[in-house]
Image 1 (cartoon, one colour):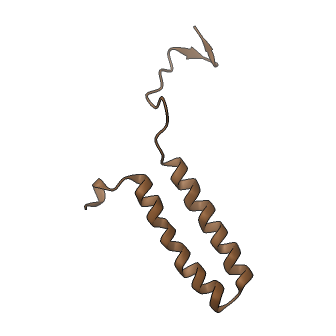
Image 2: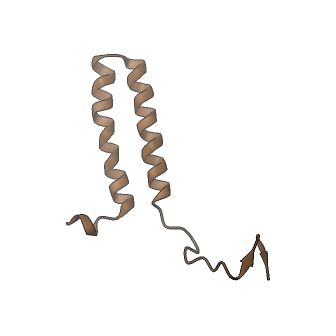
Image 3: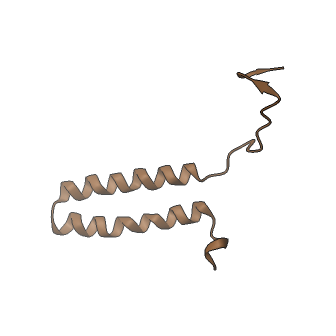
Amino acid sequence: MTLETVTPRYAAAVGLLAVVPVLVYGVTNSGVAGLVSAVNVAVIIGSLYLAMSPVEGAHGDHAATENGAAR
Protein backbone atom coordinates (compact mmCIF):
# COMPACT_ATOMS: atom_id res chain seq x y z
CA MET A 1 0.00 0.00 0.00
CA THR A 2 1.46 3.34 -1.05
CA LEU A 3 0.76 6.66 0.57
CA GLU A 4 -1.30 7.79 -2.42
CA THR A 5 -3.76 4.91 -2.00
CA VAL A 6 -4.45 5.52 1.69
CA THR A 7 -7.82 7.14 2.28
CA PRO A 8 -7.90 10.20 4.54
CA ARG A 9 -10.31 8.53 6.96
CA TYR A 10 -7.98 5.53 7.28
CA ALA A 11 -5.06 7.86 7.96
CA ALA A 12 -7.05 9.64 10.68
CA ALA A 13 -7.93 6.29 12.25
CA VAL A 14 -4.24 5.34 12.32
CA GLY A 15 -3.74 8.56 14.28
CA LEU A 16 -5.36 6.77 17.21
CA LEU A 17 -1.97 5.14 17.71
CA ALA A 18 -1.08 8.41 19.45
CA VAL A 19 -3.11 7.15 22.41
CA VAL A 20 -0.47 4.52 23.21
CA PRO A 21 2.24 6.95 24.43
CA VAL A 22 -0.44 8.97 26.23
CA LEU A 23 -1.51 5.87 28.13
CA VAL A 24 2.11 5.09 29.01
CA TYR A 25 2.49 8.65 30.28
CA GLY A 26 -0.71 8.35 32.31
CA VAL A 27 0.36 5.08 33.92
CA THR A 28 3.94 6.11 34.71
CA ASN A 29 3.52 9.77 35.70
CA SER A 30 0.16 11.35 36.37
CA GLY A 31 -3.11 9.49 35.90
CA VAL A 32 -5.21 12.66 35.67
CA ALA A 33 -2.87 14.28 33.15
CA GLY A 34 -2.83 11.05 31.14
CA LEU A 35 -6.64 10.94 31.11
CA VAL A 36 -6.91 14.57 30.00
CA SER A 37 -4.29 13.96 27.30
CA ALA A 38 -6.12 10.85 26.08
CA VAL A 39 -9.38 12.80 25.82
CA ASN A 40 -7.57 15.53 23.88
CA VAL A 41 -6.12 12.98 21.44
CA ALA A 42 -9.54 11.39 20.97
CA VAL A 43 -11.17 14.77 20.28
CA ILE A 44 -8.47 15.72 17.76
CA ILE A 45 -8.63 12.38 15.94
CA GLY A 46 -12.43 12.45 15.94
CA SER A 47 -12.41 15.95 14.48
CA LEU A 48 -9.98 14.92 11.76
CA TYR A 49 -12.07 11.85 11.01
CA LEU A 50 -15.20 13.96 10.55
CA ALA A 51 -13.39 16.67 8.61
CA MET A 52 -12.00 14.15 6.15
CA SER A 53 -15.26 12.28 5.66
CA PRO A 54 -17.14 12.64 2.38
CA VAL A 55 -19.76 15.37 2.25
CA GLU A 56 -23.20 14.80 0.80
CA GLY A 57 -23.72 16.96 -2.27
CA ALA A 58 -20.02 17.71 -2.41
CA HIS A 59 -20.24 18.93 -5.98
CA GLY A 60 -22.06 22.02 -4.70
CA ASP A 61 -24.10 23.79 -7.35
CA HIS A 62 -23.58 27.32 -6.05
CA ALA A 63 -25.43 28.86 -9.00
CA ALA A 64 -28.69 27.10 -8.05
CA THR A 65 -29.03 28.86 -4.71
CA GLU A 66 -28.20 32.26 -3.38
CA ASN A 67 -28.27 33.05 0.34
CA GLY A 68 -30.05 29.75 0.98
CA ALA A 69 -33.03 30.56 -1.25
CA ALA A 70 -33.65 28.86 -4.58
CA ARG A 71 -33.81 31.07 -7.66
